[in-house]
Image 1 (cartoon, rainbow, N blue to C red):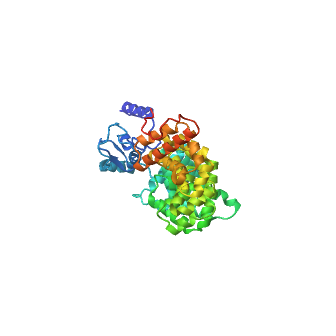
Image 2: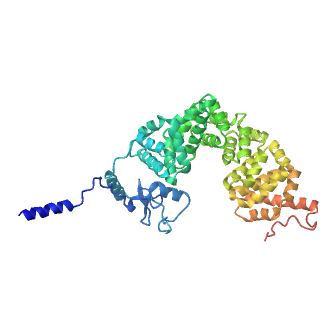
Image 3: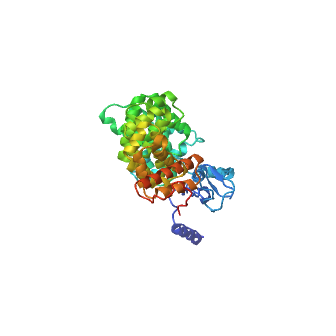
Length: 453
């Protein structure tokens, strides 16, 4: 008996000790993660192919024009998104087994302590973003925590929004900024040179919120409501002084349904608006400056066109037509059309005829249909309407491949009015070329049916 007891004691002595650590939290099943963002899905939805994605991620995929399933690459018979309620329930049950998430204050402390470490910063941002989801109902607590120390939390969120690990995470950072955007807007009216850093921070944050696709329209309207209720003149001056980033905010105000016509007119009538926009366009080649000009012209019409021309917009817009991205180049062409509708604008275009003609003809085939039709309208107004300007006709006749490009536009899917204007331009170009001896005088300028190739 004593031998049996001794053997049991010996076995107890050699048994390895129990680990003095807590069991690891359950790993997240791969099926709970969105195939696009690789993050745990918040609102799982299924496509007709049977694949399931997070609603925000797949909606961005569809909004960008894709009509295939990202996972299977199969064409979609329908873009209807069906909520996957069973998977959503399973994700919620799994979340209940995980350790409690940190409070907003703790998450912000983790973000501040991350010192640019992407993984730690993303974890903190994800925790905050999860709390502002509508079903959580904790947006007020997050906003209160962020607003308690705007001077440190806003730069940290902005830094992450510019260089975060993934697109969804960066959008989350901007969505968090949106919860305190009305408080941030108050920084635009601060006094004192020592507060310029706050103004710059506020403008960057507001531009990020107002231009982000992941921020709700209601949140954007709330920001603009605060801005137009403030000292409007001071706000406009501050935004223009902030350069291209400030112009993004100003353009959002002019195109928003929130301000009434009187507010928008007051902005468009400010004497410094177009000179500052032209300066920003020249210095930074800012597409936002072009869009802001277009918004002001749409609001105010003829007076805004005249102000734009007097500010020297024509040569700056010609440079934008030649070098800006396609969407901005099309907007610049449309603004030049507006300038050509007034006598001062037509004279300004003739003054820079060589640059304008070269820019328009060089870009005519490299824009969309709207841009091509605007290019033809601009040239017709400058060369043909009301007798036209001889300088523009000479510059257009000297442009390389002018005849061929006009023929290409005519033979494309253009409107009847554009086709008619292109035909008149062709006759004007051939007559000018004949006058200068650039083509054989026996060429019949009425034979505009000739194929370019």
